[in-house]
Amino acid sequence: MSILYDIESLKAGYSDSDVLRGISGKIGRGEFVSIIGPNGAGKSTLVKSLCGFMKRYQGKIDFCGEEIAKWNRKSLSRRIAAVFPQEASMPAYTVHDFVSFGLFPAGTHFFWGGDGASGERLLAAMRMCGIEHLAGKRLNEISDGEFQLSQIARALVQKAEALILDEPVSHLDPANAVRVMDTLYRMHNEGVTIIAVLHDLNLALSYSERIIALKAGEIVYDGPAENADETLLERIYGTRFVMNTNSGFTGRPAAVALPAHLKEKNGP
Image (cartoon, rainbow, N blue to C red; front, side):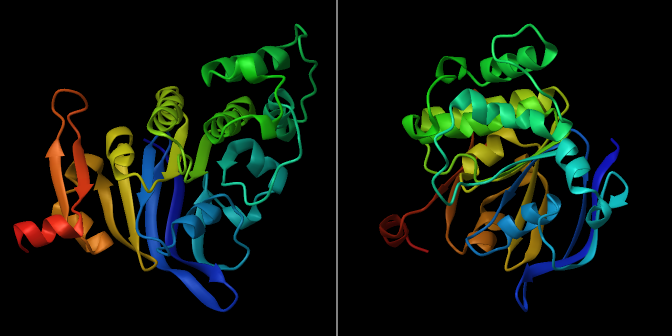
């Protein structure tokens, strides 16, 4: 597997404070990597660094063999698609227009309903995400889950080789969360590198090949998802977990944080 990202001794943060404290690692092309860890661990700072958004950092972030800071912004946006939480209300674009923004890094123009390759690319992305019926609806008329799928469709249209997502299933009900993750998994199977920050441990364990766990700005685990166990999760989150394996379905481990009243009932 060829290397997409090569990170060495990365320190990054905001103002005069480092959130990441010298992390290193490599991510290969076509991997599905979930980044987990408690609030404030540095997960968002890491994925922003991988997108080239962090202006203040020390160490090395190589993307496709070249320091990410040396990449032209437009060239980088052709190779990396990013999905981040919306912190402010979006303009009332239609879903179709919003998804079409994925064509802009390539300088592609298209016409809705036309016969061109760009129009077909747009329709194919919306079909893959199951949102073609929402094309004429405005962003303020759709659910959070539908908006996340619209963001992923936009990334699909972009045809980037890496898709980086920060909490793509936060605030989604289980059905929509699985729908989003299924779409990411299909993209992964088609060769797209998926790097996702996830708070839902069971989705991370079920879908990703590899887990990178952060705590206090440092990597405390980097390895196969199936090797995660109670001891590791307790070290990461500071609370007890119960683990089992769903051998009838995924064969992957499943994790449940043990509620305080059950800890008291069952002892330490």
